[in-house]
Length: 291
Image (cartoon, rainbow, N blue to C red):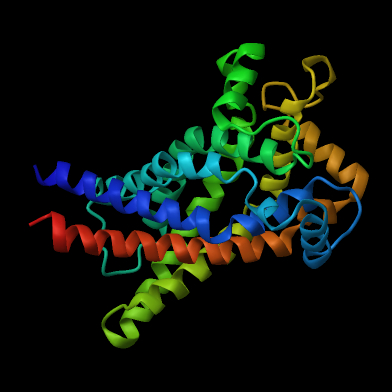
C-alpha cells in the first residue's frame, strides 16, 4: 500500500510540475523553434518582434495544447521513473550520489521519451504554422497524419528524442539534486526560493548538454510536413547522422547552437517552475491526501 501511495504521489506531483513547465515558458519555446528553422542568424528580440507583428500576441502560445495535454503523462512518467529508481536501489537522499542521480535521470529520460516525442512533434507543427488556414485542432492533426501514414507517424523523431533526453535528464537530475544538497547544507532546510534556484541550475546545465540534439530533433520532426518521397532523414538511426552532417555542412559548428539563448531562458524558466510545482505537489500530497 505504501508503494502504491508513493507511486500516486510521484504521479500527482509530476503532473503538477508538467503543467507549470508548459505554461510558464511556452512563448520562449515558440521563439526557439522559429529560430532553429531559419538559416540566417537572428536574435531573440527580432524573432519575438516578427512573431508579434505578423501574428499577434497569442501566436507565442501556438502549439501549447499538445504539450499541455501530454504534460501529465510526460512529466508524471519522468518523476515516477526517477523516484522508482531511487527507491529500488535504496539511494541515500541525504548524501551526494552523483552516479545514481545521473543513471536514474538517464533511465527516466529514456522512458518518458516515448511520450515526449509525439507531444513535441505536433507542438512543432503548430508552432511553425504561420497562417491560420490549416490546422486548429490537435486531435484532427493527429488523425490527419495517422490516416496518411499509420501510427508510426506519431513517433517520427523518437530516435532523436531519446538521443536528446538521456543526457538531458541525466544532467538535469545531477544539477537539481546537487544544488538542493548544497543549499540544504547551508541552512538545514529548503524553501520555495531554493527550489526555484535548483530548477534554474538544472535547466541551464541540462540544456548545455542537450541543445545540439534538440536542434537535430526539431529538424527531423518538422519533416512530417513533407511528403514521404521528399523526406531526407531516414535510416536505422532515424536520420540523426544525416541531419548532423547537413547542419555542419550548411552552417558549421555554430549551426548546432542556433536559438540557444532563447532555449536557455526557456529551460531556466520552465525547469524552475516545473521543479517548484513538483516539490509543492509532493508537500500538498503529504499534507492533504496521504493522511
